[in-house]
Structures are given as C-alpha cells and as structure tokens.
Image 1 (cartoon, rainbow, N blue to C red):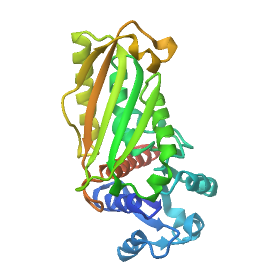
Image 2: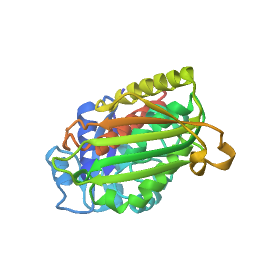
Image 3: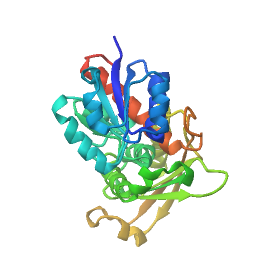
Length: 315
C-alpha cells in the first residue's frame, strides 16, 4: 500500500515535532506539505531543507500548492480560532482533518479509548495534552465502576508551553473537562493545568482523581488492574507514558457530596488517585516536553488508523 500524503498547518513546536514523527515512524503516512504564516518560521525552514513543499500563506497557500489534490490528511496544529477558519476553507475538498487544537469541531478522540468509534469522522479532535494523558485512566476506572467525579491536574514545564498553549488556557480547561465526561465516562469532570517554571525543566506529570462509590478489596484490585492495562495500551504509541507509583485508594464520606452531581451521590465514597508522568521522545523537542509529545503521538496514531480504515485495511 502506498503511503498517504499529509499536510501540517502550524510549523511551531507541535507541528515540527509531528513532521519528524511522520518521517521517522510512520509506515502509513508521508509528508506532503508544511504550512505556516511566518516566512521566517524555523519549522518551515526545516521542512524546506528536507525537500517538503512549504507555504507561508496559510490554508489558502496550501490549497494553491500543485500537490494539494494528493494530500489525504491535514493536521492542524495552530489554535482553536484558526482551526475553525481552516476547517471552513478545507470543507469543500474532502480532506481528513486531525485537529490538535481545543476547537473541538469534530468528536473527541483518544486513541486508547474511542478511536474505533470515529473512524468515519471527517474531522477528529485530539482534545488536549492533559486529556490525552488522563482521559484513558478515567475511562479505565469507569469501565470497572461508575465515576461520579473525575478531576485531573496536568503539570508541565513552562518552557514547553508555547504561545498557542498559553493563548488557549481557557479552551484547555473547558475541552479537557468535557472530554473527561464524554470520553472518560465521568458524571462530572474538572481539569486544571499548571505551568511550572522550575529549573531544570520538569517533565509532564499528571494526577487523576476519580470519586466512585465505596470499593471493596475486589473492586480496588479490578480498578488497579484496569489502570495498569490502560497505561500499557497508551505506552504502545507514547513510549514515555508511565505510572509514577501504584494506584492509591482512600475511603471518604459525605464531605465529597459537593463535588458529585446530586443524582450520583452516595453514603460513602472511594477516592482513586493515579500519578502519571510523560517523557518525550526528544525527536525535535526536549525530553521534558512530554505534553507536546503525547499530542503528536496520539495524532499520528489516529491519522494512521483513519487512513487504514478508509482504505479498508485492518490495523
């Protein structure tokens, strides 16, 4: 099977890292174009030196490229607002869109959880870096017992948060919170992001807290097994994804009622706490930038599966 050509809009850190992953890791995809709006962009310069067609005229420049008809997948690594405009411009051309912004025009997709449900979608949204890291864990717990409340804290190095991330902080919290509910299965979700300026830069760390009904010993063992298995599934496409320590459990009382939707309240609760870290592959970005690595790795996995599904090839 010949490789499918892809374009990346947004030659910043995420877009450039994704370019290297496509070139070095994918047996399904190949680079067809790198698209930006700043002619002095480092990402555009790198793509040009590698012989990849480039344009600094945005999505209009992409559409005007001689090889545009051959491009099957367009990754958007710009911003939530820009993706809305890009999606509108590309709509008439039948391209598969993979959205790495919090715009969420299409369905939320977390490869380890629900990619198979959306193989026919024309535009899939990769939620956020925090969502890709934590929603699989919420979903794993939800598969064992109802999650009445799910809260995640994504802590990343300030140096790995570029202008796009900083400009979309509100969208990050809203999109991730919604993803915890829609994909993770929690009755209520909340997301918090921390940009840590510590030196040397810290790698991405995530904390997941899930409130369930009271779990007995068997229930706790089942939850822990589900979490460990889910971590292994995510690590198949994000090698630096791992548990920081064993899953923690604590019994709680009615003081948690304020976190839980009224219809989900119980006499007794168990708090499940999971600590994760994500180390980047360091292909273009430093290894501490696991928040960016997990986004590009998840987007690559999603695009490959979408292309294979369109061609009728089993993954």
